[in-house]
Image (cartoon, rainbow over all chains, first blue to last red; front, side, top):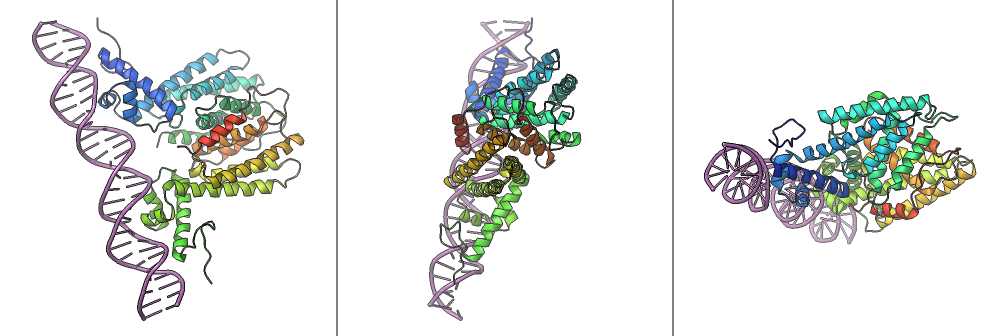
Length: 214
Length: 214
DNA sequence: CACTATGCGGAGTGAACGCTCCGCTTCGTA
DNA sequence: TACGAAGCGGAGCGTTCACTCCGCATAGTG
């Protein structure tokens, strides 16, 4: 019986050693990019994985394709967290998913700057955001979040936390949690309205489209 | 009488044409880096300034030195805003300086990622932060900010806003203001405490030290 | 005006890096 | 075990980019 290790089911099955090497490359890339940023050269990734450069390029046609695969995995994780949060009671799912994705961001520091835009990633991201916005609506219904909060405010939280994670990289993990706590506190129902108008949905869409434009 | 155009007073006076070219280089760098990021090549800066590459390198020994000078100017602006805010009444100076520096960040998008660490910049930055923390204390005294807010939370605001500015670059200016409003709202006196502990001063110091380590 | 220190331009250099190519090796099958 | 398809390593290519070098130009003085 033929082994069934496939690359996302779309291509021919890889030989056993090739499949192993592919995984070692992904692991090495996740580690190295996390620790030292996306600017590390591909030869370093190959070295850490214990394979040649040629092997890397047979499995991933470009460096971008390798990063893209890592980003896709991050969105997979996001989506798992979001699905889980859908069953939280009392509108608490929003906070659950925000802290959950924050933790994922914090442990994937290297992939922060370029959140890819290929078809597959786009689908995952759209689904993740759909759930996020649903959870925001529920949180509002339960009075945990102020009525004048909008979907785009969640994107702001994401970009803010991402900025803090990138800055505090390798020194502390408390930074992003504190940021998250402050921003959630700022979105709690309160007497006075916020001092600034939210981003329009069009602007957000444009920003996300630019996200992997280099 | 000899012209007195000097480079921060420390070196011999430049010839008039050289001083002009130096300023054109700084202006060009500010524009180009703002619009297209720090990855733009030095030859592009020289082209926009209307001078040769050699001229650029006679005035600034490395590309980093050029960026560093821009960053220094940004801190100059920060300090001016902070000084101004010191005379605001009723503990409102903090919000004034936060929105002020946010606006400066937003109009200097290119210098966001690497906030330099040479001696001169360090002095400006320390002075700016000293004032910022003084204004936080006053804001607390006037009951505008919660008692359990700490100095490090202001650094978090800065890094968050910087992340949002970098992400929304060129699309909208409302993003960072909304972020600022949400975070300030989160730091208003409130019933329940924040869900996360603040960063330690040591961690903050370490992060700032790493800031231009590349 | 003449003279020199200062400044200028831009071709060229070296290093870094993404990526290719090809001779050799290994897996998996029959 | 024998064989071919698949995989492997890494030298080397082309490009990009920060930076240098040097022959020519010009400002500013006496």
